[in-house]
Length: 252
Picture 1 (cartoon, rainbow, N blue to C red):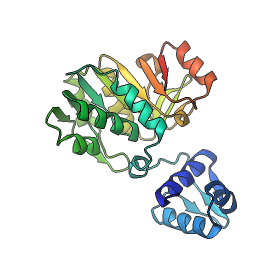
Picture 2 (tube, rainbow, N blue to C red):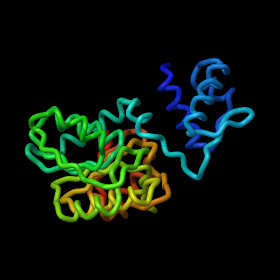
Picture 3 (tube, rainbow, N blue to C red):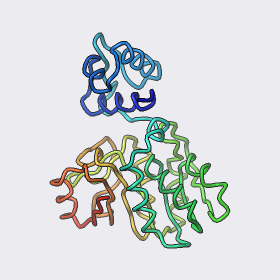
């Protein structure tokens, strides 16, 4: 297992359970405890976890994995979700894309296919699609958020209010029937909400780990979502509740 893969698995364990001990992580990853300790030390230096005597804990109520870590994890589920999302976009459409690892995959597929107009507040997405001649790129300005590579805040919201997209793909940190779509940051939530407000169809792309999860800041209720695309690992009872709220659910 590559070091980046180990780091992601460790961060997922800490984010899900609140803590993780060295011996359990060693069994999970199939590596020595010494390797786990080195990984934890590196993650602690990056302030992604807080070291304890026997392992690590998360520093706050929710641990947000920085985008640079998530982009390294091109899981088959994430790619399948992105392909299904791209399949919803007709040629020549105007597409809104918020930041996130799955939306980044959607952007890549759309850029390779073209022609398409991409409206985004994600700096990494803008950089990745800029070389494609059949992409018309509109970058929404705002205050830079390092964790997600997004430009957020009042400037972004005002710009989005003056435009309309055919579809908007939202990356979320949580989606549930009870609390709708949520993320970790208030400014990011408000900007994502503006994407959803000024589009013809809002599509949430989310791996199964996001289903039934609620994080700090609310983006929008499920009534604002037209389609959810997720993978087979999503809990069926949560999918049933989401469908009952009027959301079209696609499992790929």
